Image 1 (cartoon, rainbow, N blue to C red):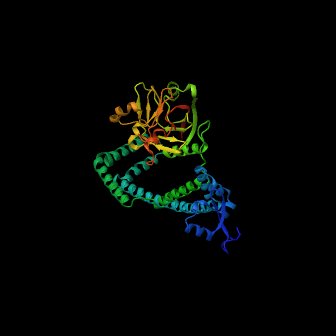
Image 2 (cartoon, one colour; image 1 turned 45 degrees about the horizontal axis):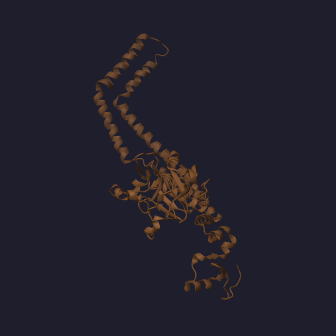
Image 3 (cartoon, rainbow, N blue to C red; image 1 turned 60 degrees about the horizontal axis):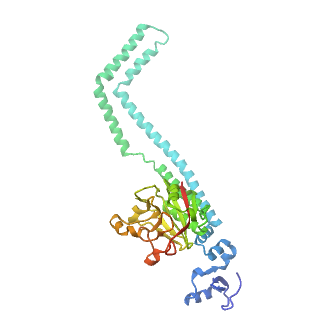
Length: 423
């Protein structure tokens, strides 16, 4: 960009100042003046050169989608020169590993030689203790009979070997064993003091670990994290779909492999019986509701939904359950101390999330004191956020009572149930 700023001589336009109803081209001196007067913030400035060369950067600076801003920001960081630098570093490490492999191979031969020397020392001591030369003499005498088959000579050789076994080993078994144990113990202490630590092998192992870390880093760079989507939903906006998936993946610490719509219902067929027939025995469910006022909200929990006549709470020890409001762009994670009240399973009600400890339950029972409570006909519900699921401190209690449904007449018109599968 070579256009001169009319306000400041010898200064060229560097930024686009994006305002609500207009944009302004400004130079570095304009920028300094505006900063001093506190009339502009850095996030409202677009670098002209970067925007001209890079559509990803331009779009990430203009869009109001946080998900897309993050995606294109990360995509923009992975430039070819950065990738080339990563590859060069990996190539250096590969060469270092190759050199280390040669050194490690030499190390193996050194330790092999030490082992063979140790084995020879033990063998020499053993030959001395058991008078091995006498046994060899017996066998040599037997070999001399190979051309003359004489039963008497063979019998004599057998007797000689028997006498050797008896006189040199069996009759002295305890003494011989003790001598051998003494020798082995001495050799064991010697080898323990000069323990084989394979320093070159350990160095190679460290190089492999570093190389693996570099490969992982490179793999992350060339595999951008695309915004997640939920197919077959008529309620969730694309932006919020990506947000929900990102939260679930981070909380679960494992990738989602499948999101299946298992039920979708609206208006006349809304009832608890249908709901329980669809969810009984299932876990990892994402449930999305639309109220009569068209507020979109819902919940996710890994807990298993089980039909119960008397009613029972199900605990979420993973702390991955949360409520959400698409309308208010809010997430309400389960409180650690209230993880035992993640969901409530009872055939008399629809889905219920959150609750109160046993001592307080009698007080709040008739108030349906749950963070989200849907009755059996789905016509009446309640939203008392902050009971078991966390809220922002700035929200007031009157706001919370209608926060999800968006009105006092808390009626559901549509809901969707998705089951998630993980790798």
